[in-house]
Image (cartoon, rainbow, N blue to C red; front, side, top):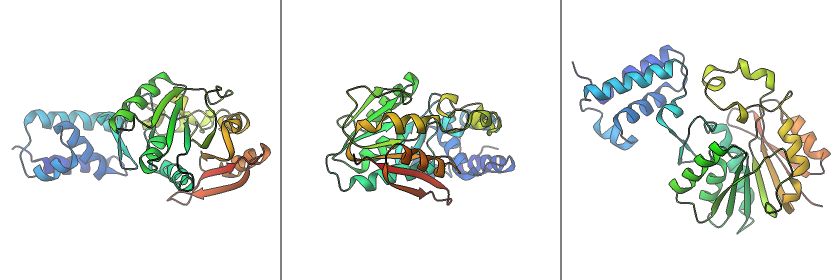
Amino acid sequence: MPSTYNDLYLDTRRALKRNGVDSAALEAREIVCCAADKNKEEFYRDNRLYATPEIEARVSALLQRRLQGEPVAYLVGEWEFFGLPLIVNEHVLIPRSDTEVLAQQAIDYLKDYPGARVLDLCTGSGCVGLAIASQRTDCRVVLADLSEGALRICKQNVRRNNLNARVTCVQADALTQPAASLWDFDVIACNPPYIPHQEIPTLDVSVKDYEPWGALDGGMDGLDFYRAVAARWGHALRLGGSLVFEVGAGQAPAVELILAQNGYENILTHQDTQGIWRVVEGTVNH
């Protein structure tokens, strides 16, 4: 008996739920859309139509890979962040909703700075910088990462979202002094690696076996990048500019102290939708 697209969706959702996947409905839809090469609108329009055996086989193959731990974003090759479609692969972390808090704080700060310059440091897929550029249409954004693989994805995402005119990509190591060309930013937004080294093997299979360890490993206590960026990148900010960090659960007090020790002022911390203190920011006033 052939299956409709809706049948495939329901069967896939059921299998994901049985295996403890929290966002089973979302992931099931993404898998069926990918297998059928349809967008969301086409999926809803066609969900009563019968799928071909080839599409059923593709859904089954994608589902098996997901049940073995591979993240759905890597299966389908893209993920949405702040309403933007972003290409993702094993070279970049999958954008997460927690990180939208970082982007939103930068966007809110920039409303008073028309024509601002923004640096997204440790950019990965480019998600934070591209979200900022999409919302603050007068600002210019630099996406910076050490990983060449990540920068290739960044460039694709800049083109995909038609932001070439205002967004550029550069290679930079957040642990070292910035190049002379990277200066006079109004905001540096940074979602650095922050998982303590010894905790990485304890992470969920979908993270530790698939996402890039270089984008996860924050050193022995998870704070190496915060120390380096706070100490070395403040000179890249203009007077009154803001350094805005995403932090891991429980790290906010330590990062607040790091900023204070490095002379940042007006230090503020913001919660994510789960009530976790997720973003810490400070300004350079001297």
